[in-house]
Length: 90
Image 1 (cartoon, rainbow, N blue to C red):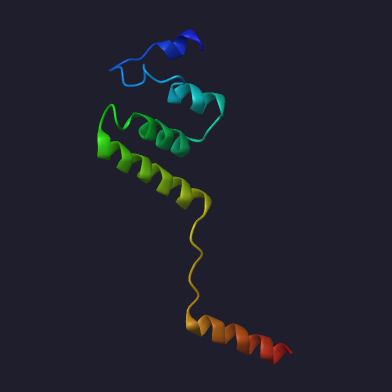
Image 2 (cartoon, helix red, strand yellow):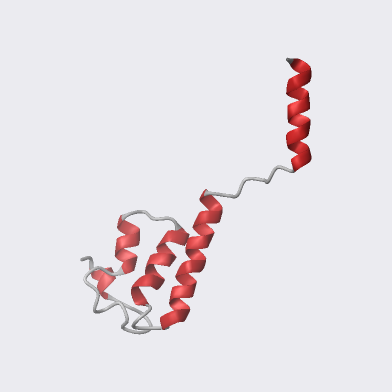
């Protein structure tokens, strides 16, 4: 482990971990949302318990929204218009 990962500013909740979340996140070049989710999942028992799990969930939801946005729901009239257009061009 690099010396930089042995240092922690503000607490010691990562000191007991074999691999600090920041080292894992950086070495795997993870995006921001995934990195923060991992960080909060790793520390929840030593720091803010349920609040950290809710934060992790929030970052997971952000990643889902970023990478898998919901498709716009089609209105029933949209289907009818598409069908009528197809039928007309047939």
